[in-house]
Figure 1 (cartoon, each protein chain N blue to C red):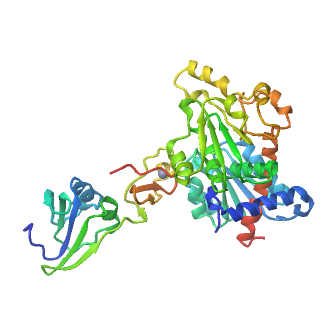
Figure 2: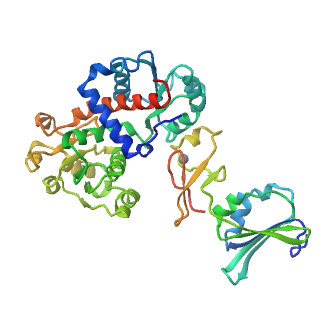
Amino acid sequence: MNVDSIRDGIVIDHIAAGCGMKLYRLLGLENLNVPVAMITNVASARRGRKDIIKIDADIPVSFDVIGYVDPAATVNIIRGGTLIEKKQIDMPEMLSNVIRCKNPRCITSTEQELDNIFRLTDRAKKEYRCIYCDTKAASL
Amino acid sequence: MRSVIDVPDLSLEELDQLMDTAEDIISHPDSYQDACRRKKLATLFFEPSTRTRLSFEAAMYELGGNVLSVTGANTSSAAKGESVADTAKTVSCYADIIAMRHPKEGAALVAANNATVPVINAGDGGHCHPTQTLADLLTIRREKGHFSGLTVGLCGDLKFGRTVHSLIHALCRYDNMHFVLISPEELKVPSYVKNDALKNKGIPYEQTTSLEEAIGSLDILYMTRVQRERFFNEEDYLRLRDSYILTPEKLRLARPDLCVMHPLPRVNEISVAVDKDPRACYFKQVLNGKYMRMALILMLLREAGTL
Ligand SMILES: [Zn+2]
């Protein structure tokens, strides 16, 4: 894989420096058998330092997960070697089965098959709470 | 299907309607004696809470309905590992409405998401207990006649007491409320509750450690239990416990129209001698709880089209 040129895939750019690996894990990229380049701590005019993830495969990625980790990230869709779409990312109102509730008294701790759902409760603070027990999601 | 998991599930108009219905039941109990005839309430109590269960069951009986009762986690399907979702689906086949108590936070929401009949949260761990707050609201309305411009003192364990947090949130929806938060340093209202309910809405409040100093300014005094297990050491507990016990001596400093409330059960935080004082409203509060549960059962069964 040539890190600079992707034919068909996705480039997640302008990720806050240090968040790239978290995003990599939450997107489940470590479990996919596709070429992925993780570039960390690159100089960025916009953000000072940034991380970049390049996925050289036409696979679906969850924009909710990207928006949860860093809503300031940008997503570039590449087809046939050219950029066909730049997606603006936003914090999702709901986050389903991305993170787990850490509250041991929460019903999700004993009923493993329940969906772990978090609701955005404070956009300015990037605060998500479990819909079952209202516990705040641990910060990333 | 409409369920009630927490107080904010009800609009202010609906709260008013519930209180109106409850007052009408109090005035004309006979006209409600067959309101739920041939309807069944299932009380699913996965942890013991005799008083709450009895209140729900008495409420349904007074509406002329019947009760199916499941108590204790060991005898129920939970012991066999059945999920809350499956239990809710199954019980929906037998009952017209469910009141559920469960030790896990969020269990009532899971039940509501899966039941095909309305679910009332009768307490999910330390999370919500909306019908307690409904009882508190009706008591305040009956004693004071209104919710405007009241000075409400909350005393005791304000850190862990979910009934206190729920009541603060509910009362903040009314105009010109003023709160006096009376507790030891160790048991102050958590800052997230203060920020969400009071500071961000500009609602005035004071914090104090002295019940004696605060009591004279109050319209309502809501007492709660100060539990031994909340303290690191025995000396702190014993030292502080007595400061937050309401006695006839402290009550002498209060207004003649003070309304003293307590979610019960009490241990020793209100001395028994206070019971004779006309300002003691905590047993009326128990009765009001039953009337609000009747009103809530009626509202939800009507909305479900069952009545
Ligand atoms: Zn939870």
